[in-house]
Image (tube, rainbow, N blue to C red; front, side, top):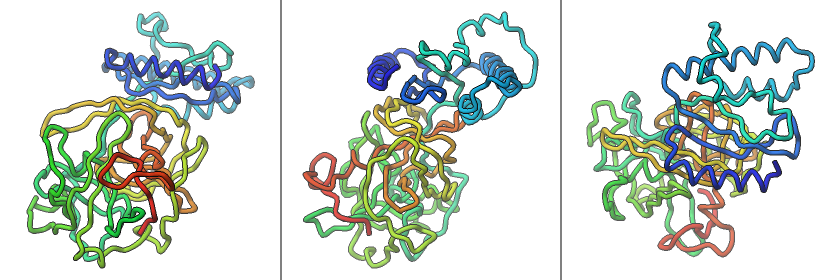
Length: 366
């Protein structure tokens, strides 16, 4: 398919995801064996029996490809990077479920439209209660942040920034880190460091207030929370990367093939490669003991970037310290991470002020 045809097909798949619960995500990617041709990579969440059969199927094919001198190297590398684990057991190819799975060898034909593999589901990366963090005198990107009143929430401070014609200092994270989807949470609710859910004994006094909620946005386009930093805390901000003196420089658009990094409170700095600029995903959120989902569209998909609970709200940047986006979810088994392009949230010109809808008039990172 051409890229336009693939994007149009993804629109139809995304629309169908409301009624097809086993599709975890779908994304337009370049065919690894045909430069300039595209297909849909999609993840499917299956039951245990089907997972076993599918894993064994992929293992058999990878062994066959590795032994064949005619195997395209790009296809073999893609398959290895797309699957977390494989089964070595023998199974019958007559299993009914096997007949539902498109043969991966079809990737090298012009007719191919899909590549599928099993996933664990796309999950938001909010508070991990097994983690605990001390309160720091300085505030840095990559540190723990959360709502003062919603103790099961928590995540990562992405970065500090200013807007044009606005003297306030803000921090960016995800809505699900500091907000509550089920409430009419208003602005000015207190935000603290570390998140109360990240303190050793869930004690309020172990966290200090650093500001208040300024903006909460969660929809099919983005999951964004903006905190206005209090005047008392502004002098405590440590600029730039949490473990280096480098400062984040500017915002740029993400591109397929970019090697990108994130720094989160759980897995620290990890990296991966952008393989899609147009991904739809069904994101699962933990909400006060229950799970809710939201289908998000036009997101960026990264392969092999390690991310885990607590890393939500991390900014995504490159080796030049240019910021490309805001991390919000991952699929553990498929080894995929998802982020929103920073150019949806900020604009270098013709943006809005903080009281309107994004993109906002970006000035600089602090």
